[in-house]
Structures are given as structure tokens and as C-alpha cells.
Length: 482
Image (cartoon, rainbow, N blue to C red; front, side, top):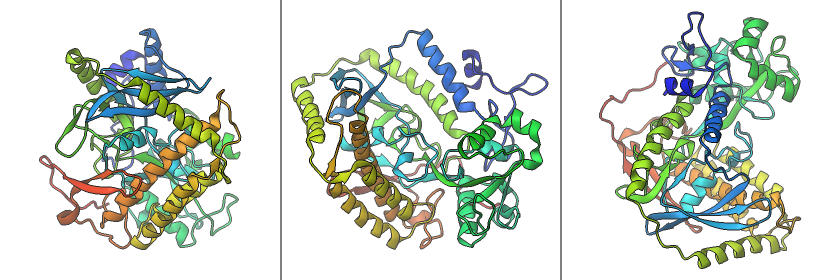
């Protein structure tokens, strides 16, 4: 796949002999990650979009997908809303594939963009699809403080240090053999423990603050500007720090959706642990193929996207040959969608949308963050129910149909609330610590009771949690030691 991407035009970084360069990420035993400076995702995205245009693929810009049409396990199409003028369309299709990304905006601090509100996951859940392993939320250790945007693991891969208020590389206390390149869950918990112990820093350098430092100064200007230029640009642009001369304040930030829409290795979405849907596929971060287990390794997200994107694309091309259009009651779906939009516009509540969204995001970060306990999560679920009731009291200032971004944000908040409740409920039920899911009241992994996948079925009243066996036939389970 790397060679295919190169042939599509992706400009990978090179060694002096012309071979594609590789570096290590957290948890890696050797350098195996191909990269394009510290802008690998952007470099891949640029060429994939260029090739879409080259192949004259129709792209529907600025449409918001409102609903998956799934009847008796058969995907028949989608309902979508044109942001430009409020037009609602039903798109009938032989196959639907979701590649809608993650849900970082469920939390108050995230590396994700503003559109990562879990819409594809929420639509699937509303259609009756269970969401798999949603308790496994990856928090990236180095979110730029206070904005939360990602400082890539590539920076630590090139030799940057994590230091506390004492100026000490504290990772020697937590993972001495890997240091800054320990797996992300271990590094995130280490940073939080340093902060809780009073060894954090404030951005101005004073001790006892809410973050730690990522120190690049020893790497030198030439290495920083040639190997990790984007890191320097982001720190300089967003918080005014020149990483050549000053350390960067960082703390863990919600980063990656390890769970998601359950699929098999062909990309077919599961309706249950024994039954597949027809005509519904998913790929990328929104899907849970479970190649990441409970704890994704750095660099495997882009790899999963391109590998399974190709596999699933080919499977769909074959699947669709014997697939016919299904019948859809256009009138009923269209009327329901229009009524839903009008109801949101007509609300005469007292709650501001942005206030409720922030309260929900704060609740998720406070009660279901890097460290979790039964009491905290139970309190969080009570709080979530209160916030869900407040959604009915939201009012919108913009009552029009032309570029009504407030309306889109209200639809996104519905998704955030659905996904957040599923994450919190799944995490409460998993009484162990495994990978990215860390319980202070259950610090050990429990293979006897919890070596199984969570399947969470959504309803407005209660989340139904079921389980599916984990199949391990190639590797022996071991304790991680560093």
C-alpha cells in the first residue's frame, strides 16, 4: 500500500540512498513508520483528493448527512441536508459506506477537527446497529496546551523529551526501556500522574501547573525545521512559542476512536454478533475492524485507512454487481426529515447551544477521561441524563435555511450526546483495565471475565450492553512490560 500511495503521488520523506525513510512511534520495537516529515496525513489526503478529481468522482460539498436508511438490516440509502439552502434529499443507493471518522468533540480537549462529532456512529446507533468497544478511547499524550491540537508522536520519534517542573525526563519512572516512546496510554497516564503529583508546569514555566513540557531544544534548529516543521509551526502560530528556543506545554488530549461501527474483515457492518447487514459497509476510524485491539499503536490509523479503504472498496465493487436498488418510501422519510428540521428551528427554549455542548464535553472529560472509577462514571451518567433533558430546551437564534451553521451544530450535538452516553455506559460495565481503558478501581486486566468485545445497542431510555467473543488464534496473551 505504501508503494501504491507513492505511485499516486504521495511525497514520502527519503533517506540519502533514496529509500523511503522510516521512524519509530510509541510501542514500536524498531523503525517501521513511513512518513512525510510530520505532515503524513496531509500528504496522503492531498493526493487522494487529487485522484478523486482526476477520476471525475462526484463530490457533494457542504451536505450534512442526517440519517441512514436501514430497514430490516438492509441499507437502502441516506437522507442529506444541503447547508447552502436547506434542501433535503434522499439518496437511494445499492450500497452505503461510512467513512465518517471519529468523535473527539465528545470531549472538551481534543486533537480532532470541529467536524469530528461522531455523526456516522450516532446514525448507525439510531438505525439499530450496535457500536463496538466504545470504552476504548485513545488519549494522545501530547496535545498542545491549552488548545488541544496534536503535537505528533513523530516529534518524540525524532528525539524530543518529556520533562516535568523539575526539568527531569520523568518517563524513566514509568517505562524506562521505551522512555518517551512508550505506548500512548502509558505515556498519557504518566503525564497525568506527574500533574496530579504537583510536578506539572504552567506555560510560563512556574511549577504546579496543568501540563508538562515537550522539549525539542537539544535537537537543534536544522533537525526541527527539516524533520518536524509542522510541530514548530503549530506551536508558534497558536501559542507564540518558538520550539527551537523554548519547550512546548502539552497534556493528554482525546485523539482516536478505537471502537466504532462493528465490521468484519471485508468491511460488512454487523447487525449483531452473528448477523451481517446487507448493503452497509464502514471503513477508517468510524469502523471497528479491531485491528487495534484495545489500544492503537501510533501510525496504525492512517495505515488502517488506506489498507482497509482499498480492501473494502474492492469488496464493494464486487458486491454491488449482484445488488439491486431497494424500494424506499420517499414521502415518509422526506416528511419526517423536514419535520425534524422545522422542530429544531421552532424551539422556544432557554438554553444556549454552545453552553450545553460545553457542559456535556466537560462532563465526559471529568467523568470518563484518562482515569475512571465506578463512582465517577455513575455520577457522569446521572449528569448526562440531566443534560439530555436540557437539549429539548435549546433555542436557535438563526431561524433561516441559508447557511444555518447553528442548525448543523444542534444536529451534531445530538450525535455527541448519543456517542458520549454509549462510551460512558460501556466503560462503566467493563470492570478491568485494558489498553486505553484504565480503571483505578480495577487496575488489572481480567481475561476471565472481560476478554470479549462490547456491543452497545442504543435507545433513548437505556443502553443495552451485550458481548461478543474475542478470537485470538495467532498470538499468546502477555502482560505489557517496559
